[in-house]
Length: 302
Image 1 (cartoon, rainbow, N blue to C red):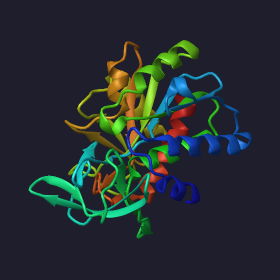
Image 2 (cartoon, rainbow, N blue to C red):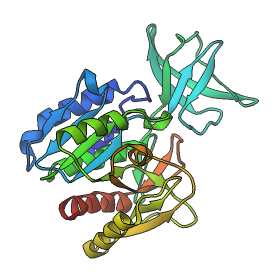
Image 3 (cartoon, rainbow, N blue to C red):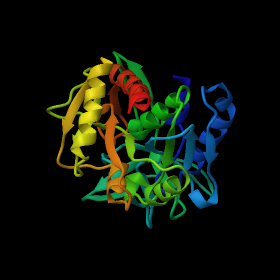
Image 4 (cartoon, rainbow, N blue to C red):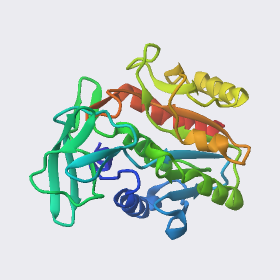
């Protein structure tokens, strides 16, 4: 779990993903010689803070967003949400401005959000939930399992992947925007017709802990049924535990794939969590293991 611990402790609020990008670049450069296939690696100014890895001759791309929810400091100790964080008086927040490190608490007053740091924080500073990682009883609990587990899944997939794109996107938690230019580059470089979204979904009345990874049949957006049927058939053949999700809200990078000008099938597949968008997101380790296993299987057989 050393890699996951490192991922969970990197600040990467939407719009400020640079620290995560730098970590991923260093990690790939250190580890790629040990992987089954050496990928072509794309990053830099034209990709903003996104990264792309191309293994062999891709048929499928896996997308994982590297940003998190958080808060922007406004005026008079006010905070503005980034994405959709749950808010509760007393949540610990951390960050850093030009004057030094920041650790404070979230204060909600009549629906407005504030911090209690003893000095003014430089306006525009981004704050995130303080990290406390707990692993016990078959669960992991921490802030930002969404989407650190999706990133973790992709990095583990890279170890054995022979053919495919692995794509680390930005901005997903607050409106998206990076996937369109990433898709354009992919389709001009080594085009694909199908994609998987490595992200984290929700525990609901139909989705439980310890029952396997979730294959989403729909959220606010609807994957093409013929592609979904292929994935479910392969999942059944694999023997890996999985659950089927049907929701009417929520979204992911799949939204932007569906809205793109390219005929690319997509499906969201990921472990489910409790306490969504809080400092104590909770995921079953069994479900995480099945997520890792199913991605390995699908990328060999799709």
